[in-house]
Length: 127
Image (tube, rainbow, N blue to C red):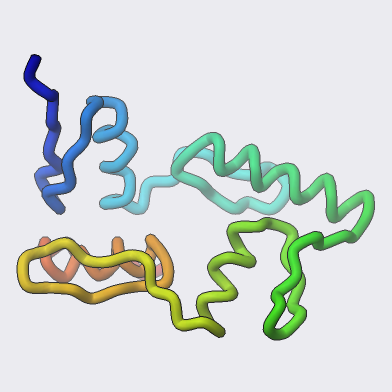
């Protein structure tokens, strides 16, 4: 049985399902389909918006930010924000460019996505 592999025409990343490729294509655009009604923050994926909305409930009712940085004690209401913040201290750059001959590494997926556009010729949109 042959394995189905779908290729992103922009960055050459491979996917096993058409739905995964469709979701991936959103990183190459600035389209945000899901917006928080409380603060206006936008997300490309519904599950990210749902996680974000929980933080409003926690902050409104308790003011509690449960995730603290072990380096500087700064607090966050989302674990992902803490993980990204800690990279400032430890220098971790887990997102690597896979274009031939390029091995640049980045702290966030967003930074990598912006970098990939330098290879593809896509223009960065600044707001």
